Image (cartoon, rainbow, N blue to C red; front, top):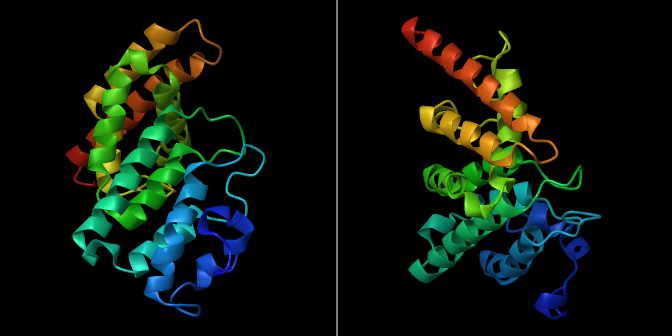
Length: 221
């Protein structure tokens, strides 16, 4: 693998390495060498096979294992800039079926390596507010509400998301401003195919918000 030009390594070249990097195979220096190519692959998935043999969960997990937040300033800046750029692309990339990971999965995996998601949530809300960015950020939000709201409203799971998102994501998701963004999106894109998902998401978001308010009043959350 090391003999091939880095930018020509296919996803399958990293099938085993992504799980064994630094713990069984190679060093931190090796990981830093291959990291740009692995990040490039997961940032530009092929429609027929999103990441080939690569799993962002493993790559981000190895970044955390490598304590990337303690790397040299220029290295940390490069990784952080990648996350910001990746998120910008994800927000505007349509969810086109089973090949695409849902936004909830990306949030979970990014949380595992980056900690707070607040800057990414702020960016998402800014894209929602700017209708010139198109409807895709709103449809991603509708899917997040559908994926997580349905589970959160279940009596068996009222204290967290099934995908393991941190509490500040819940706070954001049930906020007044997000409810307003969903309503605005529905009125802006109501004539598009699938627009009913925005209306349904708004209703579910309001149900989640009411439940959270009740739990807080009862000291259960």
